[in-house]
Length: 81
Image (tube, rainbow, N blue to C red; front, side, top):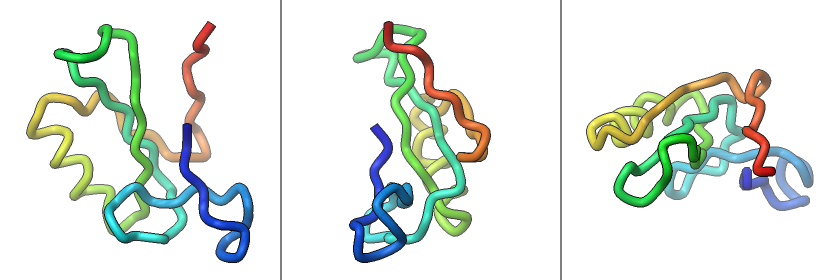
């Protein structure tokens, strides 16, 4: 699920950055997976604005969780079925 801003902010469907306290529109999808908890093909997602992309990527990368970073406009969520 991709978080979105409240209707009074950017709009009802505007995805927002996952960084704590950030309310900026997201422009990146960081796909990740914790191999201790998830099957290899499972992808969880965090969203990032330009300012927080590097910080969130480093956080996930340091733990070996980061699998892919994709512009939000190009992201296609895997089918769950």
